[in-house]
Length: 361
Picture 1: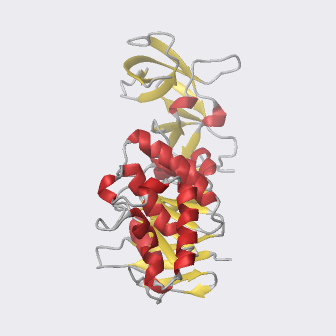
Picture 2 (picture 1 turned 30 degrees about the vertical axis):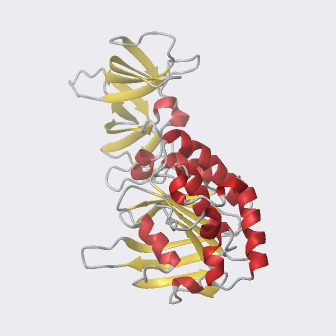
Picture 3 (picture 1 turned 60 degrees about the vertical axis):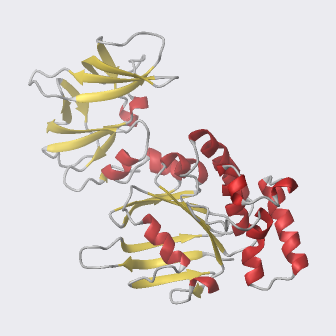
């Protein structure tokens, strides 16, 4: 077992620059953890700390119960795939694949066996082995970079935004390949990205980072369905979740002229509360829907299978309240007066002051 653990890791460059703040997490064998967050949130610094390319200001890093906090990168038995591929341009594909093994004085027969196995897994044809990186497509170069990590048979794989240099179609294909390749490796994988699609499709669990802190660490489906706070709710999901700060009256939150039922288990009704609901859950009323709002469509964005419709909610107080809904493409929604349902089971509630989710199960 080569379980990876980060225990209260902190990285400080100066009093004003603290990219990693008290991060604790673990990744077991056969787990794929994605560090997800916006630029500057601390995810790449965290990866570099695991790799030994940075030293933590405090905290502890272990791999397979071995404390590697102060062990140099080359002695940690990790393999890293970089955003830039980091291939040697003057070497052939074969030479790039075996370069790390040669540095460790691996026997030639073992090198040949490992490279052949990696090439088969990655679908690298024999006729590519004598080519230089400049003669390869972006997808082929990325496969070689992954292959160079695979042949090392490390205790931990680290991947730093490896798909960001690929076009959208190629990124989708390589993403599917990466999921299958690393699922078969049976060791911890840590993957860094700001792309939520990559995080949600590849991972067994996701750590959402912001401002150096882990905001939520959960399986991707729970990150999506039970966000821990307003940041996670707004960052994960496309189109973005509707997040509306509403006044409370009695047992209701007032959304324009409509009353939205507050949860039954609320003990003290606050003056204001944040309502969150994803556009795909804001729908045309169905039988049994009792919680509805009225408004007027002012923007329609065509997304292929759906229209993203922006609605200005009716308000006798002349409030400018907008809610977005994913609606079918079978009719023209432009400039229409519309009634929309907000099913109770799809509504998320957040504290106005802290941003934390309320009433999570």
